[in-house]
Every structure is written in structure tokens, then in C-alpha cells.
Length: 130
Image 1: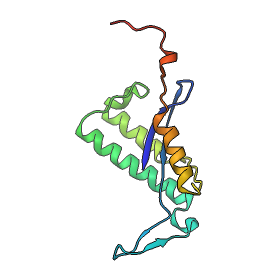
Image 2 (image 1 turned 135 degrees about the horizontal axis):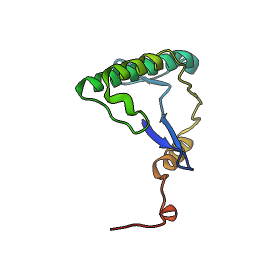
Image 3 (image 1 turned 45 degrees about the horizontal axis):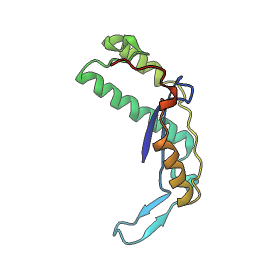
Image 4 (image 1 turned 90 degrees about the vertical axis):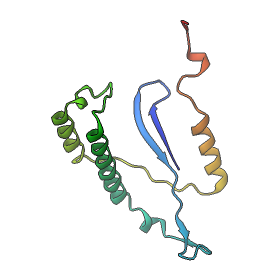
């Protein structure tokens, strides 16, 4: 399960994702749960590299379909500028934070807060035209 967030509570740009990942899975027969050692399942430094590389690979694929436009990255419509930006991003460290969810109740509570939280609540709207 993954959720995309694009801003923080104060409406500043803070693009990031939240992911929930099980520490294990069903065996090949689908009849037995196999718990993995969480330290071995996703070493943070490897997860960071794999996510960055997969994200950039898919972003490049999208750009081939048609130019991407993003207000905070105005040069992305130019193929050469886009390639240079992706090349630069591919050498950077993409920080991740890995924490155990502990139990199902905490996971449900966390998901509820993330899903029902909106950046612009009714109380923040000062005026509407039409």
C-alpha cells in the first residue's frame, strides 16, 4: 500500500510517499505464511537505491511518451534538460525511513490519519468565486 503526499501542513512543497510493506508473504503453495527477518528483507541502503533507480527509469519512460510539465521543474519539457536532471538525480542519495508498524491496530490508525487528512480543509478557504 502506498500513498503520495505533495505538501506539508503549512502547504509548502514536501513531495514524498508512505508505503506499508509486509515482512513476509505466502509460500509457493499459498497455504502458509512465511515471516522474513525484517533486517534482511529490505536493507535501507539497498531499498533507497532500488526505489530511486526504478522511479527514474519509469519517469524517463513517461517522458518518452510526451513531455512532462511540472510547475516546480519548468525545464522538463525540454528533452535534454530533462535527461540532465534525471542524470543528476540518479547520483543523489534519496533518504528513506524504515520503521516497524508493530501491529494491525497501529497500521489501521496510521492509514486512517493519512487517508482522511487533507491539505486544504474548509477552515483554510477564505474566499470562493463562482
